[in-house]
Image 1 (cartoon, rainbow, N blue to C red):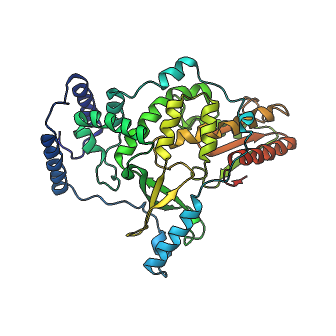
Image 2 (image 1 turned 90 degrees about the vertical axis):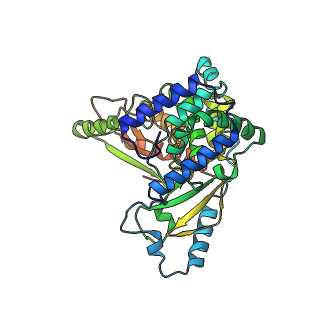
Image 3 (image 1 turned 45 degrees about the horizontal axis):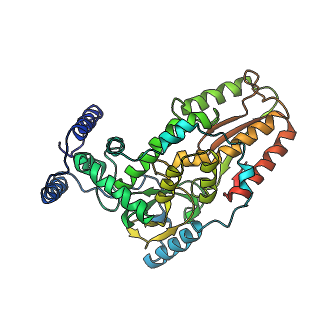
Length: 398
């Protein structure tokens, strides 16, 4: 197989071929020197045939590098280092009685729990590699999805060995724990890092790990996440949210739609609270430990134009751009949405006449709440304050 770009149809056929080969052949006895030589030659061929990929900045009229043009390179680096070191420092200890706060979360079935905790197999690795998106910028090691797909017959064994070593040592290799962060401008003062969204560019081998976790979690989400949440839930779509809001706006009686915007929602996820939520859902301990492995001793290197900071410790939040990030976010925020929906229903019906029990529409952290009574506003404020007291999350703008 060539490692050059393929059409979608060709890519899917290649994936099927990879999987068939990986499942029917035994590659363990091939001499390691031959494998290494083949990989090196492939990388050289790619370097000569393709344009060298660089870390891409989203094309915006404003960049952090331009906004800080009056600063020296050393001051830019120091400014970034200080800001992100503070931003990603560990949360203060959360309330110890969060078990009671989470007690109303639904549980997965025992059968789902057992299935989720089964050992990682070659098939899991092959499926994860096949799901890697192609034509994407690689991480710091320069190895993209095409490379792993090309050598999938070897990597199914390499990854199984790597899994066992990582669990044995309790952390990933340094290259998998370090991501390069590109900054995407949102709004406000362009010289303030607070007004940028940090997107983590992880190495492809890390993404294989994350996809395996995602594949274990995805099938159970529809059973434990409310119908108001559509992000990354099988058979749900953001178009459900759009259609619902459109219809509700046309048919709404007396009432209001409240939009919630959590400041740096993904970056502010308290990991201890996340793990408590996973436990409350009765997620298998193997998967919880796997997720902890993904986030243990993580670092980022922030990119400012052509400049790179030294590694910065990341002790809070989940990575935007991580294959499993949105799933972890909706699992950690479900308790808030579930409690809001339940508490609002005790006061008054929702203002949308055709769906009087539908109070929420959510896509990840983009949440709209439908209220028909001033008393519901008080409940909403109380629930938000309680949630942040337990979770240690960021500020919420209503």
